[in-house]
Structure formats: structure tokens, C-alpha cells
Image 1 (cartoon, helix red, strand yellow):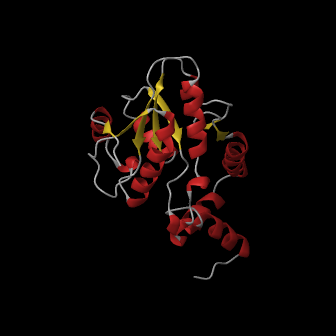
Image 2 (cartoon, rainbow, N blue to C red; image 1 turned 90 degrees about the horizontal axis):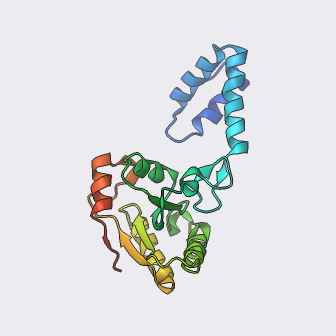
Length: 207
């Protein structure tokens, strides 16, 4: 389809670069923005600029935050001896939506996937090991438990196995959520009841 303006074409190209947005949908959104007032379009674009500039990774768990430490890590009511390892922020939000988990998190930022060129060094794995070692030397005798809440995919299982080997030297208890999830399913697509039961019925992780 030939568009009437190179400016519209460029805007459609940018909109279509978003995941799940085809060119027809991108064109519809761009034309909608053209019909909005200058003030509305300015507010729209400014919100994304402010988000990009103001959001960064939590220095403790790599959750997204506006401050040095995210609200979950800063909450004294959370159990800091329980750390749930997730692939990305969407899985964290899925677990938080259940309202049943009151521990901490560690966001890996992906899973090991050689096909996509993603290796262990591309993920927040070393940061997790360092975090656990610091927790162990902090003087608290309470046991540390790390819960693997990773996708039930080959990449998720590969990542879990690598993490298990990596964490062996830390001496922490390692568990994994129960497989109420279908093989190949992402956490963010599971219903809340399934996630709650998967957490409650977690099992010791074995390679």
C-alpha cells in the first residue's frame, strides 16, 4: 500500500516495529494520532521520553524502578530469605498479581538460548550469585531459598540447570515451582490460580 506521505510512512514503520503490531494496525494508530490535538500528541510522546529516561534496573534484583532500589526490595514486610528467579519483568508482575508471594525476586533478563545468541554472560546470573553470597555473610542464620520460576521450555530448563550448577557453591536451598504449567507455556500467560498452586507446591530442584 502506497502511503500519501513519507512522514506517515516513517511513523508507520516505527509503530510497526513494536511486537505484535502489523502494518495495518500501525497505520490505524498513526492516523488516529494525526486526529488528536497537538497537546495530546505532545503528552503522548513526552510520557515515553520520561519513561525511557527515568526507568532503570533495581540495583538489587533488576526489577524496573525509578529509584535505586525497587519498591519490592525496599519493603521491610517482604521475606528477604526467599528469592524467586524469573525470566523478565512480565513474569514478576504475573506472580505479584496473585498477591500470595511475599518474598523477593531476581530478574534474569532472559533465558539461555544459543539459537538467539543469548549466553549466561548476557543474563543477570553473576549478580544473583554475588547477591546470595552477600546474603550468606550478612550474619542472618535463617536459611536462604531460591525458587526457580522459569518457563517450561527447553531454554527455561537449560537456564535452570545452569543456575543450579552455578549456585551449588553457595549452599542455598534450591526449589522450582510445580509444573501446573503446560510444557512450553510462559508464566505471564498462566492464570492466577495455577501460579498460586505452582508456588505453594514447589519442589526441591534436581538436575
